[in-house]
Length: 425
Ligand code: 5AD
Ligand code: SF4
Image (cartoon, rainbow, N blue to C red; front, side, top):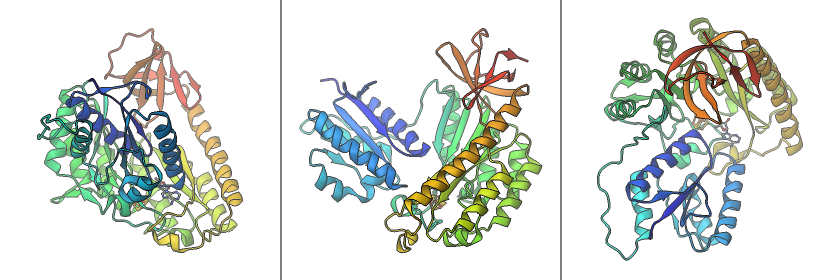
């Protein structure tokens, strides 16, 4: 019987990447990826635990899928499987398999899934490492560092993903080279804290410089960064390595020194602003984005306004705002969650409004400028690409351009948060 699978992915880009690798591993076993869940006889849910909201989303998905698809095998992987296995098992008896394993090795996840599909048969299991090939993917992702050892007071990641572990430098370089041979032109380096990368004294700057030497690779991006690990060497590397893109995600979380201290972020606001200034002075066309948490325990109106003022001053290209949600195991879960939901919501909206004003001005100011874009896809008669600093550009299809090429265009308009161009320069 032909087996079709469908994967739901909740959470960050690292989860999306893991689902991609799993998808490839299952295809190597002869399973087919289904476009719709209705057709699938194997449904996988890749979960996230960073905020309570993500867990609620998964729980309601478990409920709906176990009711609606009784004939299908249902498998749960990811962060929730890691630490909520017993609870999920008790509440959802129809889930067939929960795979809890740190560092989600997709090779072994795939073989565990295959075992439950062919319980009584003796199909041979693959023993070689599955390389992520993703032929024809112009933009491709690779995780270079797993877990995190920073233990920010609010964050569950170190508890579910374990301590920071940099992957082998040689393996990363080999995989990147293979991706480029298969058509990739932009590689995105992933990790909770990519700029802390260190493997046998090879640091993040050296890794970037050596990946940049791969012939035919045009661009390198990376995320996410911790401000405390952003060295001057790294700033210089970005400034002097033409292939490195200039959108830098640098979570600030708060601008109040009291809150930053209680969050165990290991920097203060003055350090953060100084870093922003250094980045802006050294790297041209830089787009700095950030994460903010509102309503961390004991965040007063004064603390909040310090953050809002900082946002007006720094002018981030994009801000991801989150309402604080207490997470099991974390240091902050011992504090009283004493900012009301109403205040969290008010603060959340205020930041979003300010962020929108700033980002629309940045985008509007770009109209008329020339930008270098890498053409990534062709959807609905429109070519899509990204600027070096991370903005999406929709290009009129009157041009016949191959995917994976870098071209210079004039920005002629905007559509939502994207830029539009109908002119190559
Ligand atoms: N509550 C709210 N936001 C959180 N984040 C991480 N943990 C929590 C939490 N408990 C946010 C941080 C982080 C982003 C990925 O998620 O801003 O940078
Ligand atoms: Fe969580 Fe802090 Fe690590 Fe980011 S740096 S994953 S917020 S512990």
